[in-house]
Amino acid sequence: MSGREKIPYGRQWIDKDDIDSVIQSLKGDMITGGPFVELFEKELASRFDADYAVVFNSGTSALHAAYHAAWLDAGHTFITSAMTFAATVNAGLYLGASPRFADIEPDTGNINPDNIEALIDETTTLIVPVHYAGQPADMERIAGIASDKGLKVIEDASHAPGAVYKDTKTGSCAYSDMTVFSFHPVKHFTTGEGGAVLTNDTDTAERLCRFRNHGITRTDFEKESHGGWYMEMQELGFNYRMCDIQAALGVSQLKKLDMFIEKRRDISIKYDEAFMENQLIETPPYRPRTMHSYHLYPVRVSVDRKEFYERLHAEGILAQVHYVPVYQHPFYRENGFEDFSLPETEEFYKKVISLPMFPLMSEKETDRVIDVVNKTLEELG
Ligand SMILES: Cc1ncc(COP(=O)(O)O)c(C=O)c1O
Image (cartoon, helix red, strand yellow):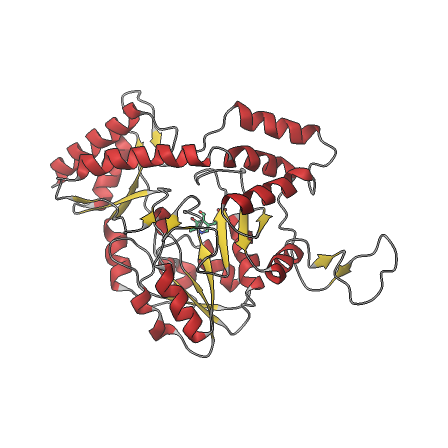
């Protein structure tokens, strides 16, 4: 690739403020269970208009805890889409529940509410919409179905901090019981590894806190305390705690979220304009009264996608495919989904590829991606 810099599909932005914040936490008395975790939770709840934010050491552990707090259990089923990272679904399996995959909307990649009701029966307790790429799912309809059937809703918003749906912030849980974020480095803002669950329900927040700390509580007792040392393990939990070093990074990163989204939006506008006239590529759709948060810029191409991917990589443009439908992974094929298929999900998977999208991407890099994509489409078209 003639000595040019490679352009990844996503990467973090770390500056001096982030490094200073982490150093400050390292100099403190408590590098876990200390003040930065509390501060990060407070600032997350305030930024996203939720009553509570409970942080975890990954988005995956946050999902596990959220499903547990929604009382998902062995023998239950939950409904989600397969156009997602495996963690959305794996977290339900950890609790002994079984997924039911609803087919997606052909353009957004989000769960199609039209396909949900047919999957509901007496075992179903939960719906998990994933805001694919940062485009909010049709939450009003999903919340309507859940309310009619007495189901809980958890938003997997790993792609969508900063998105807006009908004047409500994703994370505010205006249409759900809980919202989950991931703070992996390719996401909007990072803690290295990390995640959070946001909720407006006090009991749920308490259940989340217990679950991340082995099911132990120091305050919530029926009987009198035995002494200052006393604590109780009231249920089986995990060590899913985020440490203060991570939370210090989160506090500093969160301050930059609006700027990050602005930069992502600028890149998406350039891409939209550059590919508008090209019949061989479909750009992400935008829904009325929603604001996309542009975690990914997934396009659908009408050329050989594998060849397209390989030619982009040969030019140093490290586009990525999101996602292999979850039920196609060998583990899921061997565990109940052997012959399973969903037409829209498979059609989407056949064509989709995410172009580089991250706030540090320069104009020159964006222009190079546009040139290489247009040239490659012309060659393969
Ligand atoms: C949609 C979705 N859900 C869940 C996760 C899991 O998050 P984490 O990597 O922080 O565990 C990811 C991360 O890639 C994701 O994209």
